[in-house]
Image (tube, rainbow, N blue to C red; front, side, top):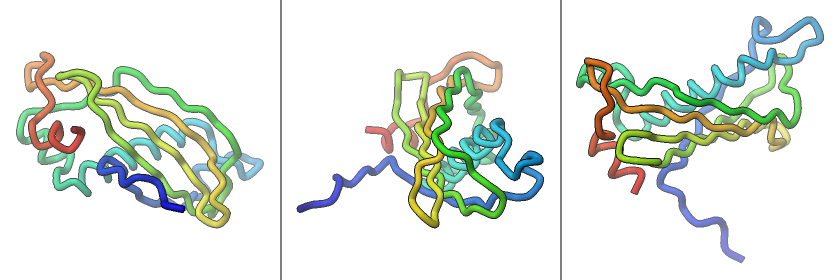
Length: 138
């Protein structure tokens, strides 16, 4: 049996749930999952050789224009979470990131979701996805 096909757009990063991210019951507050999506997206860019800082210095912004999250199981204080992030081009001016949040200790999928981003220039006008990112998305 062979494993899954190699996915050039998949990158992983990890976070550990901080006490401040939980509610009184020790369960992660729902909005923090979107923060972890941002961590995954930022690390995806860094792992492919381009930071948000560099991107903005080069005159490109990626504002979120849509976000979706499906919660499967609760994350709790001190859980180590693996953020699996994939990227795909939706159009010449939009990019989508898909996320899967997995508890490291038992590989349980805690949440899945995606964000869609417009590519904007410094004047706030749509612009093409930079070639260095587009080439990675195939």
